Image (cartoon, rainbow, N blue to C red; front, side, top):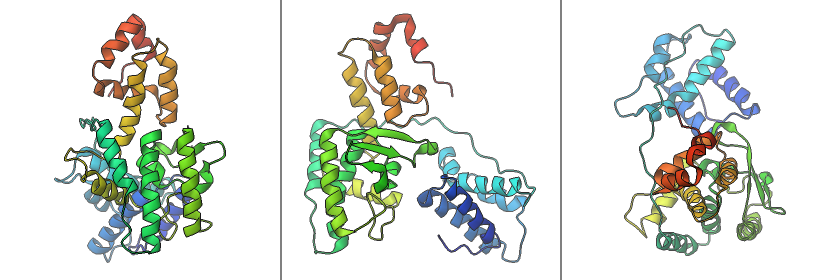
Length: 318
């Protein structure tokens, strides 16, 4: 746990403990933003010992450099902390206002087979400049980590926080506990991915015995979000100038699967449900998003379903 230093530090630590034992704590995301809030309070109100409306509202106000969504991500844990205090009668201030969620307009990169082949070639041919433990761990981890994103549509955060106990290498099933919105779901791996995960697990265990995380840092902690971004960008920039992200591998998984349905007999409603569950979507409406980024798929689905399409796949309301 980070070193909190404001007058709120005892309550912040209690809040973290409460969320942790409730299974609703993301250390790499929530704790860093709560620490920034704590530093702000300690720096701006060094002589104060009571949380005021001004403190909360000033910190949570949307900045000129932020979008609504980035502001929401930054202040979510602070608003939750204030609610925690209110529920226990430690404060009577109002909850800070949260900007409304904006519809994302970003269209993920459509990976070509050649780009994917080149990208994974770069993953497989990482150089080890010196025979240190971090370098050896990095070399065996990167090819497997990104292949897991590619082959199963797992979220980058889910992969980072994946614990060894949640990966059943006997039956090839992954138990996703730390997911978006903390919804638990299961993923069944392809046989080839299971074999790769087994080989990696044995090699990683030889480097870090009795580890907790499946893809650990040197000290058996989950990697931070920037670890994924930096490694993906480093490898991707060697093969393409196109703008792409590691999260795009998840989009690729969804669109690849949906594209295969266009040449098969109708029955995509069952396939859609299976895809939605395996990707950890809370509802089928979330999965429907991918129809808008697959050329001509909406027309094909409408032709196959006629008037029943909207009954099976309801409209997404913002």
